[in-house]
Length: 233
Ligand SMILES: [Zn+2]
Image (cartoon, rainbow, N blue to C red; front, side, top):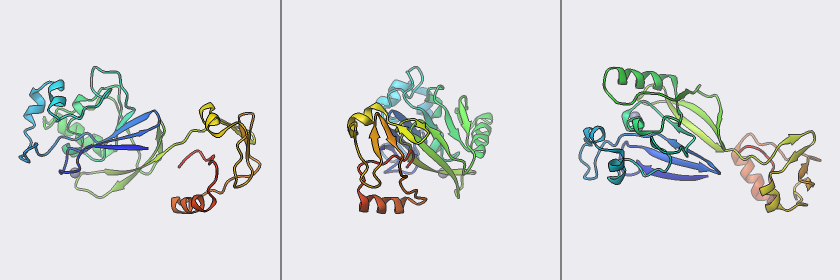
């Protein structure tokens, strides 16, 4: 999983974090800056007047290929943490084909703020998440947690990489061709003797299941298996 923090490390607000896993790409928050490059209060009128190209050149909008209106979308979603403008205030530039994931309270507050003319951000394409209910976006497995913040219905997302290795069939799992190439046609798992034959892992014995990631990491270090055929980490 690759993480790029486009903004928000040296300032409060303006959060914009990109996560990539395989061919899946998502963005966490897309906030309006609170300060400009001189550390003075950010003048949000600039965003209303300047063109998209100008805002990218000036570094107010991150340079994201396939994220903005008028381009072929390369992102699968934007996940919002909470309804403060320094976390969602630039949404108006996002390609409406890219869905915005947000909590019910976040949706209500963004809509009310727009209704009363506080922001230009109206929600077009969105998905309302349910707190603590896991969902998948591409290669990501995401669990939203309710957290305490002055923004109502704020979310912390637990994001895991979802590793797709193939299809299940009774007693065996078919391996994706690219992994088969990497592992070899007759790879053997040191741990329990599961082997790959004719493109399938034969499930003669199961790898242990871990409820806690620390236990999995400890086991992994000790056993050093040749491959793992779990679907989800
Ligand atoms: Zn906030």
